[in-house]
Length: 431
Image (cartoon, rainbow, N blue to C red; front, top):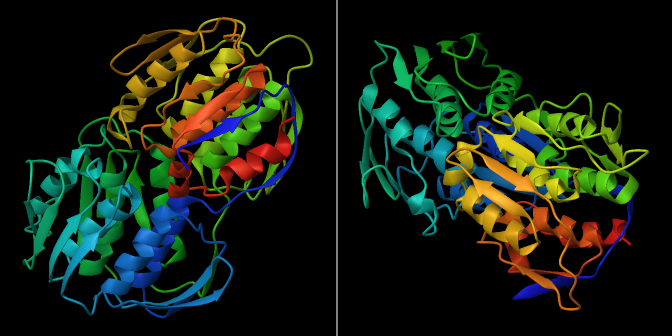
């Protein structure tokens, strides 16, 4: 489908059952593959990114069996992939590419990892530098500092702390943390810059502990793994609903009256993006939260309040707030979002371009975005939104239809990366 026309809407209410979290799904798949024993994974996200991870693990010799809808049993390889030579294509899935790079660098095999053209533009130098510090042999097959990569067998040495940057992507630290227990040796990682997206590291540490590996940390600057026998299966694990995906529906409730309830994520979540609900509350939305659900409604009086805030901790969900800013009572500023530049597209530039089509005045900084809303353009023809092969651009801009205007989403199929049924769910709650 080249485009999808969304009709003008004014209100939103209803209940949405969320798909599984992408971040939890791909981390759990890899940890289950690396552990000792069989792991039954339930509520796994069915999307392009998880299919990429499943296919890569199959190629590496991991045995798996479908045991129902969105459920698999994986037989772990106890840290030693049976297949020692493979070419892996990983699309644009950073949650597959980065952790697999680290795990395979410690696996004593010969591998090549590649992806779509955009993946080859996404930096990976910080991870490769960290792996090379301990003797891993990882080579660039194209431009220095970027995929595709070649990995060769190497003798790993963990005599010194691994120093890694944390200001471009937290996935580099996640990849090292998940891979180092495969060595059975004591290891220390020191983060030498500000660490962004800290809640995603919390997800990593939580899941590693479920697979019987505990990481001690000193604030956000030092991480220590005390050797041990590697990962052991928890037997059964259930994947939470995706908190980033919840943001679109919660924002719809805050904009369109509500209430809109999302099920599958709530007060007991291990995902930092549940803090998106707090950001909406700060804008005046009414938020109610249970252990496994969140509900959002519009302010009792007036528009959503404008904001000026740091969103380093929830960069993905913050994209939704950039579109919600169209419905605020004044200019809104998103700060500390430099990581948007190296995602599926340059999200700061892309967001600025598309918001301007909707009448907003937008000021774009190196790591900031300021959105000054104005009346939505009045036209019988839909405003065409380009999505840049970025699933979050497509989902965010569906919210613009709640301004009472028709919206055309170009390349709507890009939502298959994390939420193939998104537009069906959105259509069920808007009127």
